[in-house]
Length: 254
Image (tube, rainbow, N blue to C red):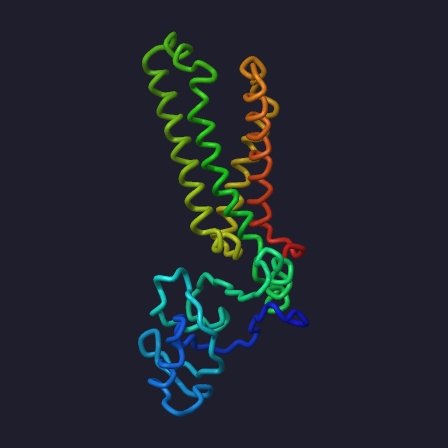
């Protein structure tokens, strides 16, 4: 990666074979597949009946954890994939990984300026939905909702709890979709952008309602409630911005 000796990113659009992420298994596997010769330039069949030309060998490492030491991996560039795939960037470094964040992002932009690098913002948004759900679960006790509803007709009470439950379902669904499919949402496909536009509008309208319609002052009776209320407002402001960025895909984020 340029002049940085701590990060190695392969920008060539060619397949690479990871002989094995085991600590001492790579050499044995190489001898089994290509005994007595260099594997570079050889071919291997993978993913069914697809043939790959070997142009490099990735060093030994565990892909996920120490329990997957027998897993064999073929690394194929996104540009050569037959179907859209989610990519994972593996970085090996002798320095603390957090210190290389800017260097890695710059390397990704040099390789392909269209690769989004703000997936983490979306994943944070997904986690924040769960925080909002926790706040929503506390709301009935804070505002004494049961006492207020007790004076209403049964149908109105039932309608409120049905709406309340559906809002909770929406928050959980938004959270799961954003966390699990963060890469897809950040990739900027038509469906992903449409979904992000919906999320952005949803939370923008919620922010407007919370700012100009709801009056929470009678219930902010102590410092903890006031602090929690301000934190929720920060989340309400964060969510529409992040989803709007994911939908717009501005050039300065690439």
